[in-house]
Image (cartoon, rainbow, N blue to C red; front, side):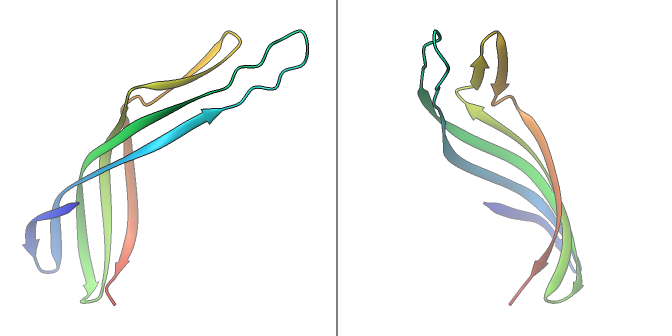
Length: 101
């Protein structure tokens, strides 16, 4: 969802939010004498951020977005003694072009 708090042509800025789910699955197939383990996890993903854009012409604008995203529950992958945590809050940024048709 996107809400423009400031709309003063050719500039607009506001806040945005996103939500979703993802499934993380892993399957093990080690060589003997090790035993395999498989598993999966479903998690919720949420993000909040701010955005700003400027119109070049009425149907074309360029903009930037900055978001903080996180998952619940926190997930991770472990192989032997090595663990990789996933789902820590992350700062994401993007830039793009928006075309109105």
